[in-house]
Image (spheres, rainbow, N blue to C red):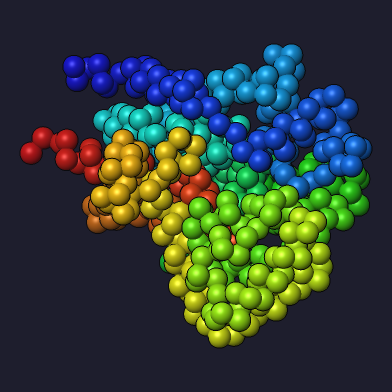
Length: 484
């Protein structure tokens, strides 16, 4: 039995079955799915990275080109587009996600090594692989045409290479030594390769360079100890250069087609000439931290009616505030389009709320968003309500729903808790792994802090942290499985 579970192909087969179950039983889509499909279809048909705006094919840059390129390739290979091609898209995503699981095993193995060039630890790699293939949260997203699968893949691959680079800091400077072996194992060249991989990941998710920020900070600490600031600058430059080389064609395309050099998609995902509701979003940031509220308020904007009774009481500091919001929404609901005047009124409300309670906006709500995105049961793609409380009422209404929600909540706690324990254990027991642990933990913290600045916190945005969590968590299970 032990021999069977140590077999990589058995683990991958189990992961394949789990992902096929989600694809066949719970296929899903979102508003972004339709957007990506439209861009990909226009790219394939008209050879223009564009959307249909007012009946015309209009070049856009509101999404990075990686995922539409993937869709266009699937469309070209299958001869199908849009909803007709979704099954093929999901099957391809299964293959990518299983590759990501193998990368998680490699990352766990790198963390377990006690020295550069040390003997590989196949046991921890196998445990990490099983944790990865059986993780329902990442597996679930193979069943929806979104970027999460690719974001996790490129993050996992870049993390492996950055960990290798951190382990090679003590290698000789590549500018001073000409040995082929030293060149090949140089931290500078490894960092350059990591920059390329992060650039590739950025073509799918624009916040992927957070990896490089975390790595640069850890490199800075290591080179500061050796008082070699020049080499830290070279390594940081290599990472940035690698990333920019991959993104340069996209920036050049934006310059030619849209008249501006832009390496990343616009933060507000707006179409050319479209009103960005900055006032409305600023007002949201003074109260919104739960995903369920997104369905009732922000995701209805400029398309559906928004009712003041659907907005939580915490959005109002007084009855007068609620009356002002009701008056604005009454005007908005007449034509379902937010005007500049209505947006300015929301901006004024946001300024007043921030002035009255600055800690609420800049400390307590970000902490609430961080808690929400990390400890939500992650069942948004499943036909489950996600409600557990009130306990007795939910038990009477739908006991199966409550039990499944509780199960996913506990599973999420298991993966997150295991990662935290693994990081602490590695830090105490393996001094060689400390720079890598610091890098992975810093990446998770910086990404979480970035996500708390978004007005609509979605739990799926931290799925790219799961490769690091699983790789560190596998160390705990490996230690417990060691003979005493």
